[in-house]
Length: 533
Image (cartoon, rainbow, N blue to C red; front, side, top):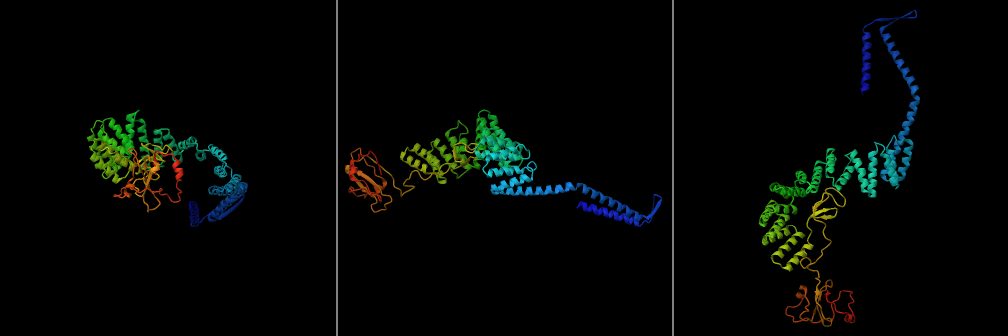
C-alpha cells in the first residue's frame, strides 16, 4: 500500500513539473561536435526522462541476466522445500493418527528433501515414528540428540521424561523435569514433577520458590497458588515445630492467613501459640476454623487449650464451640466427650444420641458405649452398641489414594502428589459384618448349644409350615444342673406359653435337597463339646 502511494506521488510530481514547464515557454540550445541543436524546453525534459527510463530498463535487463542462474536454482530449491514440508506435514498427521508405516515413509521423504539441521521437526517425526514402531531405544537416542540443539532441548527433555515415566524410573524422570523447569518454569509438566520431587525430599523452601515462580508466570491461578503455599507452609511448620518453634510459628501463621479454614494449619498455629501462653490468639484462630468447618482435632485443641483447666471448664469450652456451630454432629460429639470426662453422664448421653441422629457414624456409637460402661456397666448394652458401631458408617478421616491416615500429611504416600489428603469418610465396608434382629429381622441367628447327650436328643421344630429358606432348630436335651441348652428369642416365641414340653421329633428339619445324616453314622461319632446350628 505504501509503495502504491509513493508511485502515485511520483507520478503526480512529474505531472506538476511538466505542467509548470508548459506554462513557461523557452528553448534549449545544445552545441555538440560543431553542431548546434535547438529544442523547446518541454521536448528536452521529455528526452531526459526517456533517457533515464531507458537506462533503468537496460540495467534491470542486465541484472536479470546476471542473476538468472541463481533465480532458477532458487525456484527449484523452493519447490523442493515445499515438497519436503508437505511430506513433513503428512508424516506428523500420520504420527498423530498412529500410522507408524506412513510416518516412517514420510520421515525418509522429508529427510531427503529438507536438511535436518534446517528443520528440527524432522528429528521429532523420526522419534515419533520410532515410538510407533516400538523402537524405544531409537527414540531415546533421538531425544538425546535434541539436547545438543538449544531450539530442541526442551522437546528432548520432554521426550526423555515421558520415556522415564514409562519405564517407572521416577528419579530419572524428575531429573529431566528439573532441568526443564530450570530453563522454563512455565512448563506445567516440569514444574509439577519438580514440585513432587522437592516435597518428597522435604525441601519446603525450594517448593515454595517454585510455587512463586508458577504464580508469577501465571501458570496456576492465584487461589490455587495460595492453597499450595498454605499446604507447604503447614508442612514446614510441622518439620520445624521441635527444632525451631519461632520459624514454625511464622510459617503456621502465614499458612493460616492464606487459608483460615484449613484445619491442619489452624491446629499447628494454635498449638504453637498455646506453648507460648498466647491462649487468646490461638483460641481465636481455632474458633475461625471451627466456624468454617468443624473438625475433631480443632475441638480437642480448643477444649484442652489450658492444661491446668478443670473438667468443667473444658466442658464449658466445648459448649462454647457448640454455640458457634449448632446442629452439627462434631459439635455434639465434642460436648459429649467433655461431659464424659466431667462424669456428666446425662449430658454426655444426650449429646451422643443427638450426634447419632444427625450423622450416624462409628465413633458416636463407640462414645455411647463408653458412656454406658462408665455410667451403668451394663455389658449387654455395651456389646449391643459395639455391634452397631461395627455396622455404622466409618468416621471421617484423612484419605489420599486409598490410604486412610489418622493425621494429615502434605503429600500422598502412594503417588507423592501434593495436597492429596482430604477429610472425608473412607470407603464403606463390603456388606455388614454382624447381623442383628434390629437391622435384619428376617435373618437367622446362629446359636451355640451347650454339651448334649446325643442318645437323648429332643428337637423342637421351628416354623414347621414356613418357608424352607430359613429353617431353625434348637436342641433341647435332658441335662444335668451344669448342662443347660440356651434357647434363642425366636425359639422362645415359637413355644406355646401353656405348653408343658415339646414332643420329640423323629428327625431334624432338613434343607431342600439335603440327604441328611445316616443314624448309624451319627451314633458312631463322638459328641462335640459345642454345636453350631
